[in-house]
Amino acid sequence: MTSATQHPAPAGSGTGEPAPLPRQRGTCPFSPPDELLQRAEEHPVSPLIMADGSVGWLVTRAEDVRAVLADTRFSADILKASNPIQVIPEEAKQLPPDPAFFIHVDPPHHTRYRKMLMGQFTMRRVRALEPRISEIVTDRLDAIEAAGPPSDLVRDFALPIPSLVICELLGVPYAEREQFQTLTAAMLRTDATPMEVGMSAWNLRQYLAALVATKHEEPDGALISGLIHDSDDDPLTDEELTSIAMLLLVGGHETTANQLSLGVFALLTNPEQLAVLRADLDRVPDAVEELLRYLPTFQFGVTRLATEDVPVGGQLIRAGESVSLSLSAANRDPSRFVDPGVFDVTRTGNQHLAFGHGVHLCIGQQLARAELRIALRALLTRFPGLRLHGEADDVPLRSESLIYGVRELPVSW
Image 1 (cartoon, rainbow, N blue to C red):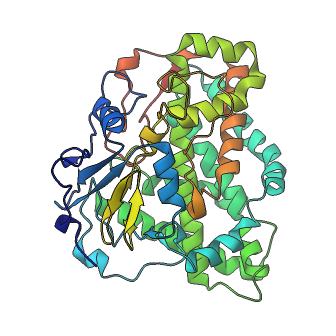
Image 2 (spheres, rainbow, N blue to C red):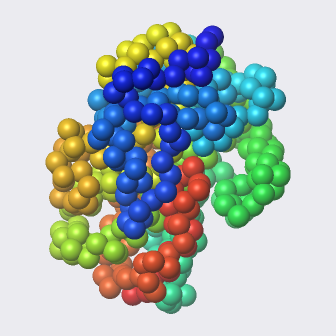
């Protein structure tokens, strides 16, 4: 496989000079970096300096991002690709991939796991879970109201809801949910050292492994039991089941929590849009789609590796070159969205890329939508006077985290 550094952009190619991924935001905490949007406008496919010093490509136009995500000639194996923000240690590259962590696995292994999980994430299953999601949201709102203002909406609302929903999804026994939430919170701490996060992840994996073992003897209607008992012709090992549970936890917890808290922050600092939504809460589904488009929570995009020469947006991407796909820039593409820099909760037909595209389209997207829709509507209904407790400029941001959001969101009502 050739190195990306062997194929720098040719002089005068119109692709721009190689440069690092823009990461410095302007004054608006909800917009991608101005430099990123400028590069997207001038050079939709441009040479990108990766964290390891190699040169790959930055793809920003929605049409091109969709094309790469749908093209199986681009591998999702992040250990083989160069990354724009962090160097992958050589020892990590030598490790065999965990196939059950299938968001970074290519077909046919990816196809096997996704096919098994699709039945667990049907619209029927999500709708059946919605009453329990509503109960969880109501319980959290009751606790917030009882404690009185101010409340940190991240700690008291946005983080617990997806954690408790995951409990329902996986079949965590009610008596163990506090232990499960403690383990989950420890692994997802943003102020922990890599060693602390690693130990927390190990502890959580041990818990999930024990949960998998229990489901063999005490089956229920939840996801782990479904995977055990619905795959008799192609059974999953306990290790595979544990990895899948870890993937669903990480993928479904932090993303939804940050989308919810950042979304509320965006609404509270856009009073005209908030007023439109409060006047007609039936607009909440459209507002959720707009928040998914407008807010760059997956702020550093996704990485792919070309396994053969592929033309993208008029530029030849050679085999062995890494590609960084900017979802946040694609969701601000003026060729796809009218006034893309405008936050508009009445926007319809919102074909954003927040959940990706192609074979790796987020399998839990309908569950995430349900959580966001139910939580947002209930919050605005319970607290019609909800407002920031303090100044917007004082809200701490997760600027260097892979998943962008706010660390705290103090509110009053």
